[in-house]
Amino acid sequence: MSAILLKNIYRLMTSADAPGLTGYDMFIKDGIVAEVAETIDKPQGCCRTIDCSHHVVIPGLVNTHHHFYQTLTRNLPAVQDAKLFDWLVYLYDIWKHIDADAVYYSSMLAMGELLKTGCTAAADHHYLYPAAFDGDIMELQF
Image 1 (cartoon, rainbow, N blue to C red):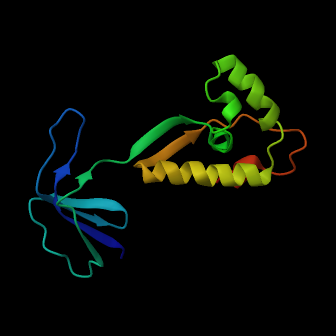
Image 2 (cartoon, rainbow, N blue to C red):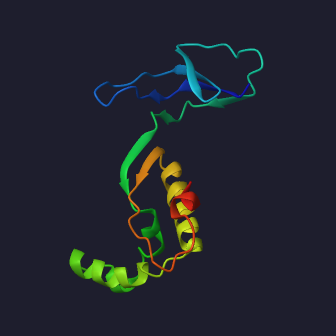
């Protein structure tokens, strides 16, 4: 059993419309919230307890529109202040050459950044399929 006990949560946000709960505990078992209460005694076999007295706990965020491959070209100086059409024209010339490594590493980078900021699910809108690409782009991402 994999379990985590979050103790004395500073603010547990349950809804965007509610002020949240203060001082509550949360027990998570096998990746599922099993209990939320004012006090939860450490269950038998609980392997990890986290003091959350200085933490805000929120539900996982969902990103419904992303382009993972773009993480590799977002800092190019030539397009930092470009208008959308100019930005696309410049970058399409680069993106048409993406390869397996570019797809893999840009996906890993994007997912890592999303997880770090609380996102637990994302929809990647990958629409570049270079003719010279030998492989399954979706398989690389998954």
